[in-house]
Length: 456
Ligand code: AMP
Image 1: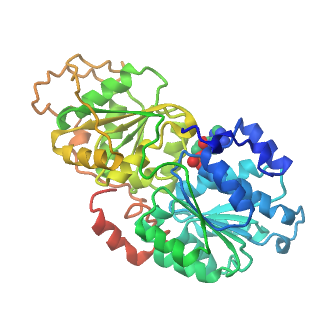
Image 2 (image 1 turned 120 degrees about the vertical axis):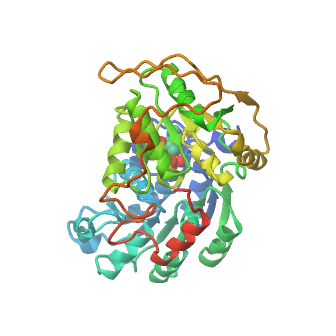
Image 3 (image 1 turned 90 degrees about the horizontal axis):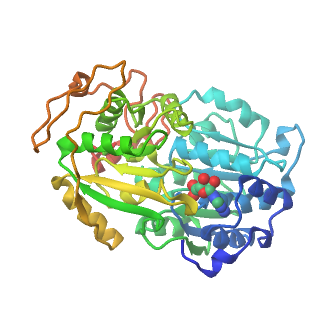
């Protein structure tokens, strides 16, 4: 990260309470990240804020720490729900991000008497009622489910002092604008609003104009720059040989070395995870056809090191916070160049070094050029070496024959891989679209699907 004056700021000079500082110290943070150094004083001063910060920059603590500080006068150990109205509302586009943000809130607030909870769609709404009924000062929510709770009269938003829109660009991408407008109408006019976004598009600027009052703008990184700590490379490889190159790559990295692998479609994600697993590389997939529970299970297994490879689509991976992830592989390049930036933001987080490898077929080169334009850099195109050696197959599985690669389509080795894709029974119909009580604006689905027909 750039060595600017902001890097020199210490947590101790930020006017945060000793109990908040204690929690930060216990997390092992030694100094604020640039976005924290810039945003915290402004938020403490009560200003509205428009912050450009990607996941991995420490943005969650950048808004949570001052938020806790500002709510501290309301800290209370009273059992009465009336003493714990919702005072801060954090909106996030996806369930995964909402869960992660709330985890961070819990971490940073563990020594103060402020309560938090999270609500998101795709699970029985009744399970979320008890926590709300007890009263919480900080509520993290996805927009659709929040409105469901409002309609069910499970919560009131009339005492919200601080509103945070996290990953606001994603919320707009996912068609949440009408929901956001409805939520905004339910909040007091007198409030502080903080908008965090990885990019500042014209739509985001318009959103800020409509909902923020005289905001200060802070920027963690230059527009659309990929994290400087990430070593990025491109391997040119035919689509048919990608699997073998990937398997070799993962094997040569050794046991315990994990990778997050991106595909463009949920079909490829499901098949790829299945095939890796069959080849002795423990893998699972997260995508929109997986139930919430399945996604959480896969993510937990990955975090616990039980699986080596987590295969994800762009939407499903949004907001994932996986610490110290050394490797991101783009098995397919994204349709939107900006998604590349989001993908590689999963590694090299908060100053740690990471690596991103893209496997690029000749037909995808157009997308690579778009990414290069966005990043204002060119990647050397290295030709991938396709190994002809047989893979080490676990003894309990039938040995896989060695495959000579001469650019020809290899014979199918796994019948399952060739079968048509069948989503799991209980799964929601579309990405981030839970079954009964959608987490998303219902009418926006078509628009979302039209814009990115296969990008799930
Ligand atoms: P975020 O951008 O909020 O997703 O945060 C990315 C990661 O950075 C999380 O794992 C945080 O625990 C970590 N982090 C946040 N602030 C700091 C800090 N000041 N020093 C070191 N790590 C941090």
